[in-house]
Amino acid sequence: MDINKTIRDRLDEIENKEHVRILHCVESGSRAWGFASPDSDYDVRFVYARKPDHYLSLRPKKDYIDWELNETLDINGWDISKALQLFYKSNATVFEWSNSPVIYKTTETWDNVRKVSENYFSVKSAMYHYYGTASSNYHKYLTEEYVKYKKYFYVLRPLLCCKWIEENRTAPPVIFDDLAKTVLSDKLKPVVDKLVAQKIKMSESDKDRRVDVLNTYIVEELERYKILLDEMHEEKNRDWDALDEIFKKIILS
Image (cartoon, rainbow, N blue to C red; front, side, top):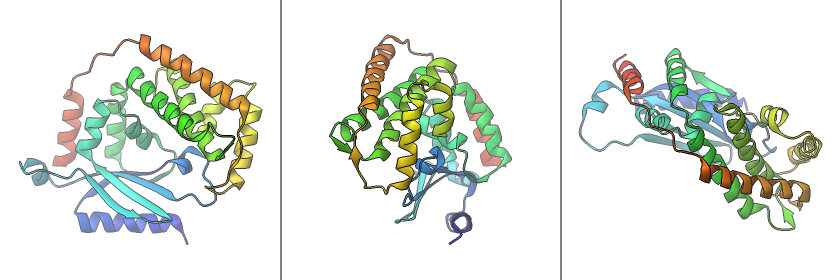
C-alpha cells in the first residue's frame, strides 16, 4: 500500500465531505519524531478552514474533525480558529504540528500562520508542557525492572525539548535525533544510540531490562526542571491583533 497516496486520498475525502479547506497536514508522534516501531500507526493531523458563514453564526460549533481511527491510520484535525487560539496560549502540540518534518499537504496561507505564531511562543508554557509529559510518562512506564523501550523516548524527547528551550528560548526541533545531537551530553549519546537501534527492531509491546544510567539521568533532570520552573517568572500575554488579522484573511479568502 502506498501510504502517502492513501493519506492524500483521505484528505481529498475530508475536504469534499466536510466542505473545508485543509491548510496544513502533517505526521505527528513517533513517525515525525524519527523513532517509529515497525508496527507504528500513522498519526495524521491537519488544520482546516470552513466558509465564512460558519464563523458568523451564534450556534455552538464543533472545532475539530475526527475522521479515521484503525490499526494503520489515526486521522483528525482542528479548525483554524482553534489552532490560532492555541498558538496564543503557546500550546506545544500546535507548534509541533506546524514544525513537523513529515508534511502531507501545506499552503502559502499556513506559511503566513507559522511566521505570525513564532511571536507567541512562551518559554515557561512550553517547558512546563514538556516537563509534565516527561514526568508523567516516566512514573507511568519506566520504574519497573522491565520496560518498553519505546517509552524511554516518550520521556527523553520532552526532557531534551526542555533543555533546548532552556538554551535557545525557541520551539524545539521535532526530530529526536536533531535534539539528541544538539543538547544531549556526550556521555549519554552512545547509550541513546544503542537504545534507538534496539527500539527500531522491537514491536510496540516488547520489553527489556530498564537502562539504569538513563533512569538516573531522567530523575535528576526532572528534579532540576521542577525547581527551574517553580522559580521562572510568568511571561506577559501578547495581544490578539496579529492572530485576529490572519484569521480574518483566511476565512475571507
